[in-house]
Image (tube, rainbow over all chains, first blue to last red; front, top):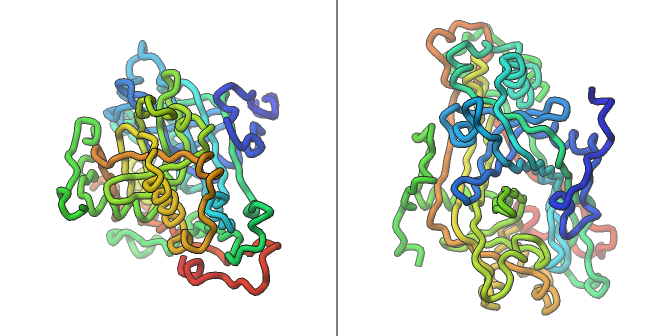
Length: 223
Length: 223
């Protein structure tokens, strides 16, 4: 299915940035790589006319992104019931890669990779798709974990809602590289360069009630 | 001024979560500590009835948060002009502190600290406040840097807009600690515990056109 898709998302009025257009990308592989390198997005929706931005986990499967939450939480209540309309959302994923220190305050920046996804999210009602989405959400955070944990039972499935957003109106925005100073600033006596930001995992902390015979799994070491 | 403020923000209908209420906090010092440990937020606003979520830098000064951007970018154009109304926003800041691996897929979680701020953002027109806000935005990313770079000149100031949000309707949400498994799952043969997430800075990379006599400053080492 993926190979039949075009190589790039179609730009739209709202996915073309008003500035720094050279940083925008609609390349499908590039967008997917940014999405697959993270698992936390910020979900924006409108409630009573005002914006709400919630941090939430996500997983990409092909050209869809899945979110999950309690059936009692707002974006899921707003899309409950077979007759419920979808929910207009904007999902944004951001990696910070480095601090960009220019000689002028004005040209300070950060290096980043971000993806914005616009569209109408709908609840997943098909049990097989829902179950696969929940596996994908665990796998997005810790690849290998879904098969090494107890799957959701009927009660847990009933308490969990899954939202799906088809990736159609999508763009990436990327800044890399060095500071760009004004020519007249090049002789100023200030240090200039990039400070890379690194993310890593610390030593896993076993739960106190874990049987001592159960070792840290390979897929956790692999993080 | 800060000492005259109450110790906690007043909860409102939209800052009381529908679930996991025990994770919510309105404590002013706690909210400020979470804000001060980051510099990137996700700014939500409504455009043509649909949500938009933009990653952007911020700085807290007392009970205000400042954002900045090009005068040409949307949230700034939407608040330009002395007669312009404010912009309803939701600003969200999220730190991911660890991955929480429970025995059941359902109880998987992440440890995090987040803050949500609701309100009406307005453009800062007072030149002194604007200049102080721009310094604070540099300092929020690299403490010590504002004085060690060239301040914005008239042209740069004119091209930059600053938004201010007063912290009134604000809440934190925090998860810490171990997984919470169901009693009947305790004997399942799956590893359970927390994998801490660490953020650090790599070796600073000087710009190629930096004079070799200019060493990496102390405040960069201190990151």
